[in-house]
Image (cartoon, rainbow, N blue to C red):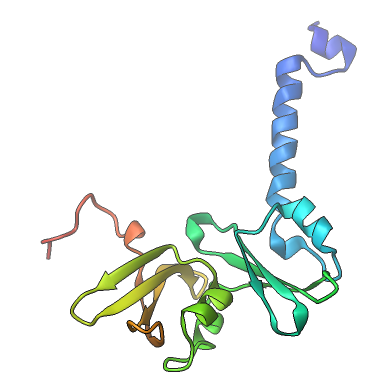
Length: 177
């Protein structure tokens, strides 16, 4: 009979492995989506860490950005009221949130506050537009990128979506039909 079986305890390697698994399970649950409304700012930061970005909201509240999604396809905005308590938690990388932004009205600041940090920024010389690329799962299925196009003054001019190039496959698809 092995020492593990006779003592009813796990050996050191098994205990270590069990601790790693338990830590991973707990960490997987620690997403902004699991934070209930009313949670204090201190408890929020204690659970999730410092946000990736912070934005001031009207009325004295603030918004915390947490990019926690795989391939940056999910980003949560956690709104805190003026008393520093969670008022709302929202995953913003989806069609509904993209549709709320209005070309000609929204600018870089409002887009950043609404969608968070872009995965990538690209400049398109012929049009003189700059694109902020936001990966997401279109219809919850397709690996896509929504590109928010800004003019030189920083005004949103249009949004375009297409496949996420990171998932197209092959080493180099240029020049292939």
